Length: 385
Ligand code: GCU
Image (cartoon, rainbow, N blue to C red):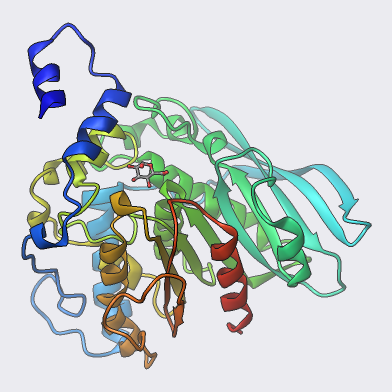
């Protein structure tokens, strides 16, 4: 209250991002008893009221319809695979006592508006056979924050893209990055947003990985943490070449249900990060009930491929319960494919992973991609053939 009063009565103090952060976090609801009732769009009912009762109708009718609703109302549209794109190997060396190969790959995209390059690092174990690869956007410009040796020892390769090379992460940044190559898509209300640009970058990395003999192209998994987990989910939803997705602490705009008023809200995310989503998404600030989708439908778009959703017990801003429920409410679509949902209906206690065709855990602790999360992800991947 005091903070709000201050902001309202001192118009000459610019409302900088930091003060906005505190405002939203201070006034958010963190009390389960204050969650208002809500009802979610039915994954198995088409826009015109047709019951979706088999895989064919899901693939032919409902899946494309939901994808389009997310483009129009949440993440915006994306360009298709660029006609003019080249890959080049910038560095190539043997590492870890010659047990693994580390390369830096440059992706160069050209359109009539100019060109834009980004890089990613790819580290593969060095066997004769292709390896499954875990691909993710990374906050760092190298792989130093990921447990490289452990990943390699388990037989996986890993690739990381410094996400800001694809698209800067600042308000008003859509005239830069890859978004600037497609100015016509910025004229629209359902514009090519930053989350869409990051997701699109993942697909471009996949365009390369598919061609690499050291990569098992049928086993390229996505990983992401926080805003980068939102992007990983959107990438997996759109691009069915990805084998599975590991979405760590994805929160609002990720796995957490938008209609649940707990932690971060649509207004908070659109205000603090106006570039993340399409302009159309702002229409739903304080009006989440009018969204034609909710985040369970994003997870459903990944079906029948596995989706592993995680939360952190202290990450109330990300709404752990809402992330769990997002996953549970996607299960009807997995069942349509003859797959099983989680064996539980209630959120499990901390540090007790539950795995089925989808997977979930809440880790004890704060918002982070921790060793515990990596350990579960690697074990889970071992169970997927
Ligand atoms: C902010 C934002 C979240 C996001 C997080 C992150 O906290 O509100 O939605 O997940 O940043 O990316 O770390």
